[in-house]
Image 1 (cartoon, rainbow, N blue to C red):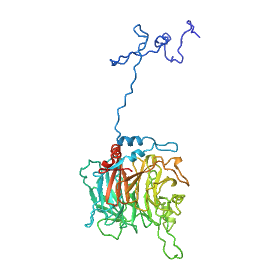
Image 2 (image 1 turned 180 degrees about the vertical axis):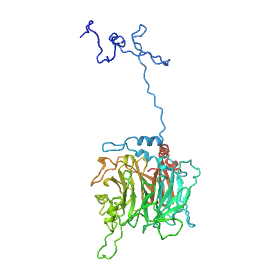
Image 3 (image 1 turned 60 degrees about the vertical axis):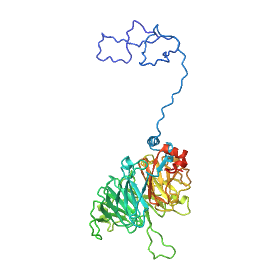
Image 4 (image 1 turned 90 degrees about the vertical axis):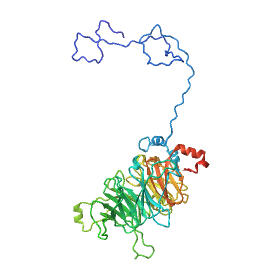
Length: 525
């Protein structure tokens, strides 16, 4: 409908507050170019390149040309190739939000295949203190917390003779000298576990001499001795919420909690080094062996505890695994109130808050098998707990119910020893496992999609999300392993520590010229 010229014009939804009536509003419109039915395109000359932004003309001009010049053949310009570095691949692979039941992250197996190790710059030897031997086998290793957060990659390696070597594993050129290492000697017996404190100033070592010892990294002095175990101490773990709390477990089936602030010194040792007793000690935490046949008078032996882990999302909690079966226990060591202690004349020991409902090791074996090592996930694998069984299978549990989700394995993976360890990468996408095979094999798993709902296996087999990558570069059993930022270290019975790093260019060169590169590198098989 046409507007009535005599009627006043009012703008719809206009603001008429405090506006004088003598100043009427006039609607203004942009000038529209004339339509001639043909599309317009700016003329370009092949020998000229426009240097200014084209001017927009409101109305058609007489100088404007009505015809377009036929476009020449367009040639696709190849993008400048970017260097496919390991840093770029790791960044692209770890891009994305944490995995859920409906999100699938791309497989990063190609990155795992690109891990290589140099014969000259990535091998470190554990020298022996004895005169009759040259090397000693390493039993445990651990990267510092700074190394996991892009700091200086300091690796603590514990040996059979009770020494701890702190090695700088920074990447160097082929024949550069190894950086000066620091050597601690806290024990005269084998060390089965070594852990850094949260601020990387202290190192805790668990040994076969039935003790755990605290050493200073800066002064290289022994600060404290923690007793309470009656057999070999298998594992030690620092409380992530408090720098003075740590827990240990041993072959005697005991769980011990220590507080370095409490001066509960033992009377057995009169040396200058203080000897502390545990504030909480749980005996037979994973049960006892039942007497067989008519041997009822024989005292049952407690079942050994192989590993303990502090969950990241649950303070005051501790998860333990045993050598008898695949049942995990979750402990809460917070003491009851004072009133409850007064009512009961005898102080009761803590009991697990909850345990695994089923034993996943019985799904594939005629009898239950123990757990050799545990490692918790982070990032895409947060909320998961990975356990390596003595039946050469990798089991996945969920927090906080400790329900088994899925299992993975490899045809060449052998774990018939309780010295084999697991380790999760700082990015939370990869898992490394040692092996007892004589070939010195290290296995890398992609666990970024291990927590998906479709990956749970219930009572049956689960197909592997991504096949494992096998790295062979040492001889004998590989037990101790740990991840740093962009690297993984493996310790073998031949007395060497080898560091593996992702390098796609070197890996492709090794595949293309295997006969030539085998004298300088080891790569995946």
